[in-house]
Image 1 (cartoon, rainbow, N blue to C red):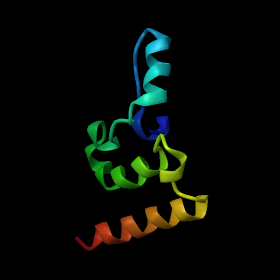
Image 2 (spheres, helix red, strand yellow):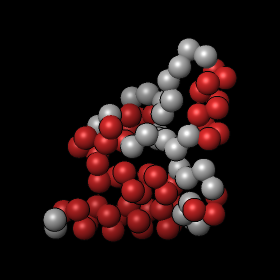
Image 3 (tube, helix red, strand yellow):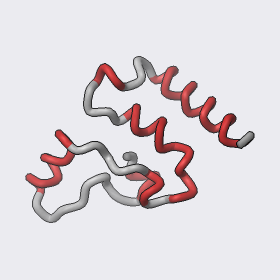
Length: 77
């Protein structure tokens, strides 16, 4: 998850090997775990940060579109 959104990295530990291990194999925590008001970004960020590149957005435009659509849909809920 982007540090600017969460105020910290996705994985915090004094042991850098643990942090690297999490980056390689652990799904990032949901942004809403730290910032509940950003819960509408959970799905978009989960896909953008997927460990498997085939599960990520195929382009920056697709990522931006998903965020825009998600934001508009959320406003009408």
